[in-house]
Amino acid sequence: MRQPQEKIKNFSNALLNAKSQVGQCSTCFHLTANDECEICCNSNRSKELICVVADSRDLLALERTREYKGVYHVLGGLISPMDGVGPELLNISSLIKRVSEEAIDEVILALTPSIEGDTTSLYLAKLLKVFVKVTRIAYGLPVGSELEYADEITLARALEGRTDI
Ligand SMILES: [Zn+2]
Image (cartoon, rainbow, N blue to C red; front, side):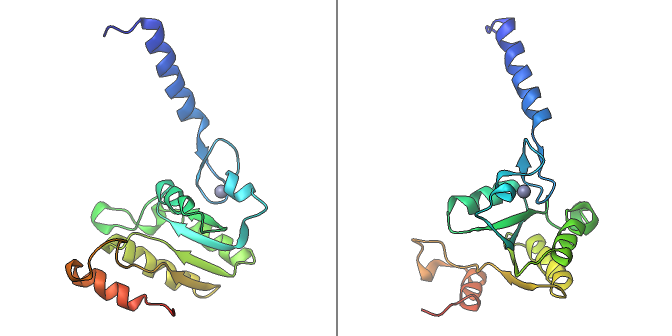
C-alpha cells in the first residue's frame, strides 16, 4: 500500500507483457516468445530423438542435467480420468503427427511415476510403437538414499530398470 502508484503500474504492465509475449513452440509446445523455441531451433540438437514430458518445468529439469541432446514434446499435463483430463486435452495428436511424418529414431517417455504418469505412458507407447522405438526413463533410488529405507515400489522399479555395468 505504501508503494507509489507509478511503480505498481509499471510492475503490473511488465506482468501483462510477459503473459502476452510468452506463447508455445509450434513444434514441441515448450514456452517461448517466438514461433519455435530455442531447443527446436538449435541445429546441434538431434531431431531424431524426442523426449516426451508433461510440462515445461519437467523439460527444464532435464535440461539442467546437460545429458540430453535431443528435442522434446510437451504434453501439457497427464491423462487423469478423475480430473476429467482425457487424451484429447493433451498435445498428443501433434506428437503422433511428428512421429509418423518425420524421421524419428526413438521416443523417450519421461513422465512422473504415478497412476496418471503410468496411464499416459502406456497410452502413448501403444500409439507410438507402430512408428518408432519407444523407451521409458528408468525409475530408481534417489542419490544418497539408503537401500533399506526405500519403499518396495521404488525398489521394484529400480530392479526392473537395471542396466549393464
Ligand atoms: Zn520447441
